[in-house]
Length: 319
Ligand SMILES: Nc1ncnc2c1ncn2[C@@H]1O[C@H](COP(=O)(O)OP(=O)(O)OP(=O)(O)O)[C@@H](O)[C@H]1O
Image (cartoon, rainbow, N blue to C red; front, side, top):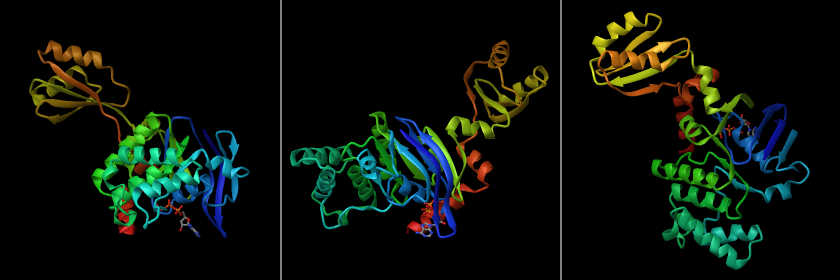
């Protein structure tokens, strides 16, 4: 759906985005994750025709963006981080106006506007002026406006930054729903949990460069230095630990609760011998869970950037 090669943006001598390459498949949610000033907005602006490309190529569904931007924009929904809607129009009017820009006829645009207001939980506020909306409501209406013409690809710049937790959760599930219904999504975020929960594939961007790119599973494998399995069972953990250490001397055993332990190994762990062992010792296993590293661990390992710092910087700036 989207093929990007050698994408570069220079402001004078300063390269904000350097030789970036990636592709997004149809039906994917692809995320750009990075700290302040990493080049996320600059990239999304180039991909959507809002900023001039210094060099490189972008191909959207077979259309060369540098040559046919208007044609490509028909396929795009664009949701900037700062809303571009009109303060003096109400919710319904804003949506109808956006629909008219895409050439939808009156009956169709009113139908779409009503449908979207209801889908985004804004049906009661359709007659309220945009300037009277809360931040969360503003963001939701801006997203609704971005999909008024049912785009094939939706570009979202920091969709949940600076809004309340409940609205952010609602927006994430709306994005998932849109994606389930066939919309390909490209988003930027500085929230690691958001990238982990929402995206099929993620690129880490730092200093204008992609430093890693892959599915969340692929990225996590990199931080996986050992295999870990957690067993929960109906017996005392400390007592059985001594026996396990004798029976399985090659594994490290860690007590994680009164009735749970973790087995660590540099190689992959075969569960069956452990299940048999618990059974032979008269214990019932409730759960055997493979413990994986989080995307946060991977991000810190690859970039050396502390996620909390990244979040605080951003939240501070938005206030
Ligand atoms: N118009 C401009 N002129 C000069 N430099 C710019 C301009 N716009 C952005 N930059 C610089 O380009 C770099 C990337 O900025 P960009 O806004 O793309 O980062 P970002 O990852 O979106 O950051 P944030 O999360 O803070 O929005 C930054 O160093 C920024 O200062």
